[in-house]
Image (cartoon, rainbow, N blue to C red; front, top):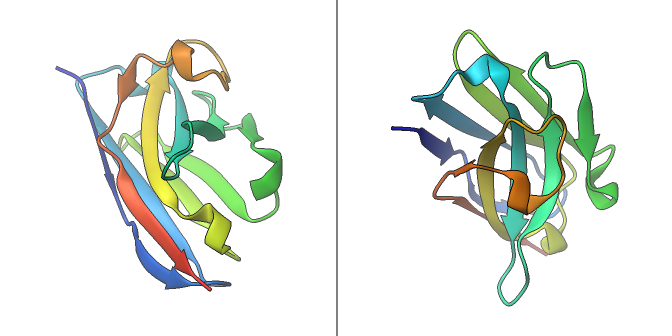
Length: 123
């Protein structure tokens, strides 16, 4: 059974930072591209960042480039999202996901999902 469990969400003021973590189990972690998505109230879930199995190839939503950094530790089966210079528009539930499609930004390509962690940025 595959499980992805996110942690690290919370309430932060604009300009602040948070680091999200996602712990994976039940899959060959090093074979998967790992992604972060987010869903704000009343909006569709959107791609935020992805990292390929090696950790050397990453991609980002344009609006988070330069502020967010995705990374992974294959030995510990963890993926991280470091979020700096947070803005109120970053408020959403953040989801970790796994896919065998290298570097995918497409939600439909992701096979496994976590339950999400809430990030709230106050102005």
